[in-house]
Image 1 (cartoon, rainbow, N blue to C red):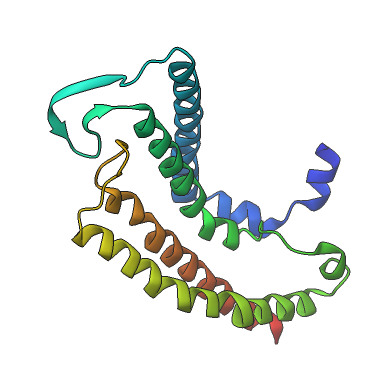
Image 2: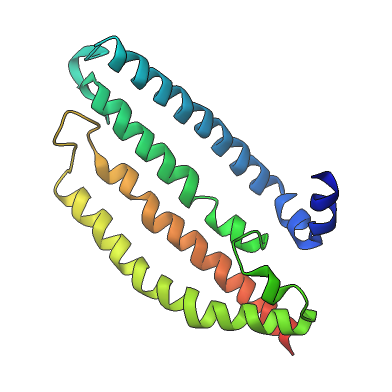
Length: 188
């Protein structure tokens, strides 16, 4: 496995992942993945032991409401999954670690690879982001205006988590812009 990783290592990946802000973000997200796993274990155990709600509060707390229930844990799992999936998307793009069909791509010259990547950015990624960013903003804004919360005793203030959709997509759009500028220079 180490030989494969050494053979497949890309200098641009080391450069991007080596930046202090990227490392801090990824380290923080790794803790969220651990929190996600603990939430899953806690939900399964409490469900098996028929413990619901897990805690009650006299006054409503932000995001949690008046109780922590099994539905709260389920909502939290989805929210943590969204955060750990969307926030690093731009870093994955910049480090060239996203999924691609390598057997078509790998034998090509660097200039041809840059042209293929540039075409992919302009024909697929850019139109997707142009469509998703306004929709993501509207989705979040609608949740905020209506003070959307879980209908089944889960988390309140769902607009907080829905903010990660436009944020993650905006970070991905920024990464796409940076990568497209790099590719324009390499494709010449």
